[in-house]
Length: 428
Image (cartoon, rainbow, N blue to C red; front, side, top):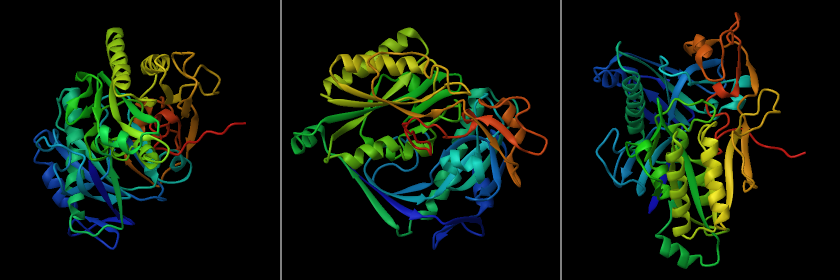
């Protein structure tokens, strides 16, 4: 498969009389977007706003972040299986409005959404302080069941992404990134002496609004599944969960999965990148044994010499992470884990809910319990009082002057377990 991501660098975003891109400026005609979204009878009201890097703007509560794109050559456009008919992704040419993002907000249906600050202390912790954000505030009609409410909001964000992405269809890109991997037989033949490496990406799949989607299929319903890495980069995997904001993998982060991009950068040089295995994180013990055993079986069948495993969320998924590690290491497959830590506000608590002696190579994305103080914003998009019901927030976290005190738990993307964030580790 060969995929070209043709980046059109966005340097500003503004409202105007048409939705278009010119000289790096994305202009959005808000009336057109609202009219299209309001075709869904389950939506009561849509508001659009803009947040730029460096502005003293707070966005809360964030549900998802998505990168606007348009497929100009090849099968599928947008999100097949969700917003369009099913198509095989991973090949062709995609024009990407690089530097722009669609950010969805709205009433909370779960307790775990997020916050983005575009300036100062908060900006240091979230990668989405650096994007030019079109914020879509979605109010569904009253009386919807929580899962329907979440589906309406998710669909509205994806639809906005497609509408805005169309602005880049005829625009020449500023850079073109090409991602190409042939069949396993071809790649092994080309790189016979390089270690064969798989990437296992764990997805929250626990119901109660805690689910990822692959081509529109709820990840609860799958066995561990092998994907070509281009499929995820091309929009096959989307976020549909309301887990803690810090390590929830947004759709934007799936579209730009840092682990996949890093593995691609070393493919044919230091390793032979075989592909991606998507593994559901289930809640039952039987489910955990089934998915972990099956994941290890796939890695062994495919002849992996090494495996990188990334987690989504924390708590009981820590057991899945370490069960997979144990099985792979005991099979002689070198394994590296990417996770974050829930180490308490002083950083002294046990970081993971489970342990395994086989876990000897672990990359930490940071401590979700670290407390940050976010200064008052000049402008808040959304509802600042939502901090009291965010994971990592509490009643009283919003001070009278508008200051927020919260754990990193509440900051979207702050401890991402696929590495798409701003945290680093330092050894002393």
